[in-house]
Length: 212
Image (tube, one colour):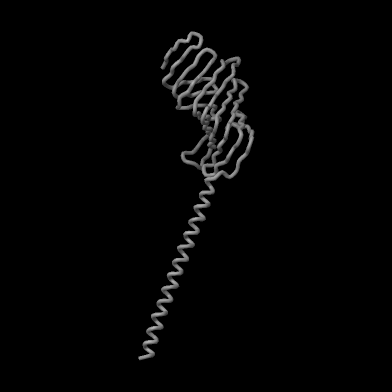
Protein backbone atom coordinates (compact mmCIF):
# COMPACT_ATOMS: atom_id res chain seq x y z
CA UNK A 1 0.00 0.00 0.00
CA UNK A 2 2.85 2.35 0.86
CA UNK A 3 4.64 1.66 -2.44
CA UNK A 4 1.43 2.27 -4.41
CA UNK A 5 0.89 5.62 -2.60
CA UNK A 6 4.48 6.67 -3.28
CA UNK A 7 4.14 5.84 -6.98
CA UNK A 8 0.90 7.82 -7.15
CA UNK A 9 2.54 10.81 -5.52
CA UNK A 10 5.49 10.51 -7.90
CA UNK A 11 3.15 10.57 -10.90
CA UNK A 12 1.30 13.60 -9.45
CA UNK A 13 4.53 15.57 -8.87
CA UNK A 14 5.84 14.59 -12.29
CA UNK A 15 2.64 15.95 -13.88
CA UNK A 16 2.93 19.18 -11.87
CA UNK A 17 6.56 19.62 -12.97
CA UNK A 18 5.73 19.01 -16.63
CA UNK A 19 2.83 21.47 -16.39
CA UNK A 20 5.12 24.08 -14.83
CA UNK A 21 7.71 23.58 -17.59
CA UNK A 22 5.03 23.93 -20.25
CA UNK A 23 3.77 27.12 -18.58
CA UNK A 24 7.28 28.61 -18.40
CA UNK A 25 7.93 27.69 -22.02
CA UNK A 26 4.69 29.39 -23.06
CA UNK A 27 5.56 32.53 -21.09
CA UNK A 28 9.04 32.60 -22.64
CA UNK A 29 7.57 32.29 -26.13
CA UNK A 30 5.09 35.11 -25.47
CA UNK A 31 7.90 37.35 -24.20
CA UNK A 32 10.05 36.55 -27.23
CA UNK A 33 7.14 37.34 -29.56
CA UNK A 34 6.48 40.61 -27.72
CA UNK A 35 10.12 41.66 -27.94
CA UNK A 36 10.31 40.81 -31.62
CA UNK A 37 7.12 42.75 -32.20
CA UNK A 38 8.55 45.77 -30.38
CA UNK A 39 11.76 45.54 -32.44
CA UNK A 40 9.74 45.33 -35.64
CA UNK A 41 7.71 48.34 -34.58
CA UNK A 42 10.92 50.24 -33.80
CA UNK A 43 12.33 49.35 -37.23
CA UNK A 44 9.10 50.42 -38.91
CA UNK A 45 9.13 53.67 -36.95
CA UNK A 46 12.74 54.23 -37.93
CA UNK A 47 11.81 53.92 -41.59
CA UNK A 48 9.40 56.81 -41.11
CA UNK A 49 12.22 59.08 -40.02
CA UNK A 50 14.47 60.88 -42.54
CA UNK A 51 17.59 58.87 -43.33
CA UNK A 52 19.74 61.71 -44.67
CA UNK A 53 19.67 65.41 -45.50
CA UNK A 54 21.73 67.97 -47.43
CA UNK A 55 21.99 71.63 -46.47
CA UNK A 56 22.43 74.46 -48.96
CA UNK A 57 22.05 72.03 -51.85
CA UNK A 58 22.24 72.92 -55.53
CA UNK A 59 21.51 70.63 -58.46
CA UNK A 60 20.32 70.46 -62.05
CA UNK A 61 17.13 68.57 -62.98
CA UNK A 62 17.29 66.61 -66.22
CA UNK A 63 14.23 65.88 -68.34
CA UNK A 64 13.35 62.45 -69.74
CA UNK A 65 15.36 63.34 -72.86
CA UNK A 66 18.46 64.02 -70.80
CA UNK A 67 18.26 67.77 -71.38
CA UNK A 68 18.87 70.07 -68.42
CA UNK A 69 15.67 72.04 -67.86
CA UNK A 70 15.50 73.12 -64.19
CA UNK A 71 18.01 74.47 -61.69
CA UNK A 72 16.91 73.78 -58.09
CA UNK A 73 18.40 75.14 -54.86
CA UNK A 74 17.20 75.23 -51.25
CA UNK A 75 18.21 75.60 -47.64
CA UNK A 76 17.73 71.93 -46.81
CA UNK A 77 16.85 68.74 -48.71
CA UNK A 78 15.62 65.79 -46.63
CA UNK A 79 15.07 62.25 -47.89
CA UNK A 80 11.92 60.49 -46.61
CA UNK A 81 12.59 56.75 -47.06
CA UNK A 82 9.07 55.40 -46.58
CA UNK A 83 7.79 56.99 -49.82
CA UNK A 84 11.25 57.64 -51.28
CA UNK A 85 10.39 61.35 -51.54
CA UNK A 86 12.38 64.51 -50.89
CA UNK A 87 11.28 67.47 -48.79
CA UNK A 88 12.86 70.84 -49.60
CA UNK A 89 12.75 73.90 -47.37
CA UNK A 90 12.90 77.30 -49.09
CA UNK A 91 13.01 75.87 -52.63
CA UNK A 92 14.14 78.13 -55.48
CA UNK A 93 13.58 76.76 -58.98
CA UNK A 94 14.56 78.31 -62.31
CA UNK A 95 13.78 76.89 -65.72
CA UNK A 96 16.12 77.14 -68.59
CA UNK A 97 15.24 77.17 -72.21
CA UNK A 98 17.14 78.80 -75.05
CA UNK A 99 13.93 79.59 -76.94
CA UNK A 100 11.56 80.67 -74.13
CA UNK A 101 11.71 83.18 -71.31
CA UNK A 102 12.73 81.38 -68.08
CA UNK A 103 10.50 80.98 -65.05
CA UNK A 104 11.61 81.62 -61.45
CA UNK A 105 9.63 79.78 -58.76
CA UNK A 106 9.79 80.29 -54.99
CA UNK A 107 7.96 78.65 -52.08
CA UNK A 108 8.32 77.89 -48.39
CA UNK A 109 8.33 74.12 -48.86
CA UNK A 110 8.31 71.48 -51.57
CA UNK A 111 7.80 67.71 -51.79
CA UNK A 112 9.45 65.95 -54.71
CA UNK A 113 7.85 62.66 -55.79
CA UNK A 114 10.25 60.84 -58.09
CA UNK A 115 9.17 58.90 -61.14
CA UNK A 116 8.75 55.26 -60.18
CA UNK A 117 7.33 51.99 -61.48
CA UNK A 118 7.18 50.52 -57.97
CA UNK A 119 4.37 52.70 -56.58
CA UNK A 120 0.67 52.48 -57.41
CA UNK A 121 -0.46 54.22 -59.44
CA UNK A 122 2.87 54.25 -61.28
CA UNK A 123 4.46 57.70 -61.67
CA UNK A 124 5.63 58.31 -65.23
CA UNK A 125 7.41 61.55 -64.36
CA UNK A 126 8.75 63.57 -61.45
CA UNK A 127 6.24 65.70 -59.55
CA UNK A 128 7.21 68.74 -57.48
CA UNK A 129 4.53 69.90 -55.02
CA UNK A 130 5.13 73.49 -53.85
CA UNK A 131 3.42 74.82 -50.72
CA UNK A 132 2.90 78.16 -48.95
CA UNK A 133 3.58 81.60 -50.45
CA UNK A 134 4.27 80.14 -53.87
CA UNK A 135 5.43 82.71 -56.41
CA UNK A 136 6.17 82.23 -60.11
CA UNK A 137 7.82 85.10 -61.98
CA UNK A 138 8.51 85.43 -65.67
CA UNK A 139 10.58 88.49 -66.56
CA UNK A 140 9.80 90.48 -69.67
CA UNK A 141 11.44 89.05 -72.77
CA UNK A 142 11.46 89.39 -76.53
CA UNK A 143 8.24 87.39 -76.86
CA UNK A 144 6.71 87.74 -73.39
CA UNK A 145 5.50 90.37 -70.95
CA UNK A 146 6.36 90.46 -67.25
CA UNK A 147 4.13 88.14 -65.23
CA UNK A 148 3.88 87.12 -61.58
CA UNK A 149 1.66 84.33 -60.26
CA UNK A 150 0.90 83.86 -56.55
CA UNK A 151 -0.88 80.95 -54.85
CA UNK A 152 -0.58 78.67 -51.82
CA UNK A 153 -0.06 75.43 -53.79
CA UNK A 154 1.43 74.59 -57.17
CA UNK A 155 2.28 71.33 -58.95
CA UNK A 156 5.33 71.44 -61.21
CA UNK A 157 5.81 68.68 -63.81
CA UNK A 158 9.37 69.41 -64.97
CA UNK A 159 9.54 66.67 -67.62
CA UNK A 160 6.46 68.07 -69.37
CA UNK A 161 7.34 71.70 -68.48
CA UNK A 162 3.86 72.21 -67.01
CA UNK A 163 2.68 73.94 -63.84
CA UNK A 164 -0.86 73.77 -62.50
CA UNK A 165 -3.04 74.26 -59.45
CA UNK A 166 -6.67 73.92 -58.40
CA UNK A 167 -6.34 76.66 -55.77
CA UNK A 168 -6.98 80.41 -55.87
CA UNK A 169 -4.38 82.35 -57.85
CA UNK A 170 -3.42 85.99 -58.33
CA UNK A 171 -1.87 86.84 -61.69
CA UNK A 172 -0.17 90.23 -62.01
CA UNK A 173 1.23 91.92 -65.09
CA UNK A 174 2.37 95.49 -65.74
CA UNK A 175 -1.18 96.70 -66.44
CA UNK A 176 -3.59 94.14 -64.93
CA UNK A 177 -4.39 92.07 -61.89
CA UNK A 178 -6.37 88.86 -62.28
CA UNK A 179 -7.96 86.62 -59.62
CA UNK A 180 -9.06 83.10 -60.51
CA UNK A 181 -9.46 79.56 -59.21
CA UNK A 182 -7.40 76.92 -60.98
CA UNK A 183 -4.62 77.44 -63.49
CA UNK A 184 -2.68 75.48 -66.11
CA UNK A 185 0.49 76.85 -67.72
CA UNK A 186 2.61 75.30 -70.46
CA UNK A 187 6.11 76.76 -70.50
CA UNK A 188 6.85 75.14 -73.87
CA UNK A 189 4.09 77.02 -75.67
CA UNK A 190 4.13 80.00 -73.24
CA UNK A 191 0.37 79.61 -72.81
CA UNK A 192 -1.56 80.01 -69.56
CA UNK A 193 -5.19 79.08 -68.83
CA UNK A 194 -7.24 80.36 -65.90
CA UNK A 195 -9.93 77.76 -65.19
CA UNK A 196 -12.78 79.38 -63.24
CA UNK A 197 -14.06 82.42 -61.29
CA UNK A 198 -11.88 84.79 -63.29
CA UNK A 199 -11.94 88.50 -62.32
CA UNK A 200 -9.71 91.07 -64.03
CA UNK A 201 -8.79 94.55 -62.83
CA UNK A 202 -7.04 96.86 -65.29
CA UNK A 203 -4.51 98.94 -63.37
CA UNK A 204 -4.53 101.92 -65.73
CA UNK A 205 -8.27 102.50 -65.77
CA UNK A 206 -9.06 101.02 -62.40
CA UNK A 207 -12.07 99.30 -63.90
CA UNK A 208 -13.02 95.71 -63.32
CA UNK A 209 -13.88 93.39 -66.15
CA UNK A 210 -15.21 90.04 -64.90
CA UNK A 211 -14.67 87.25 -67.41
CA UNK A 212 -15.41 83.53 -67.59
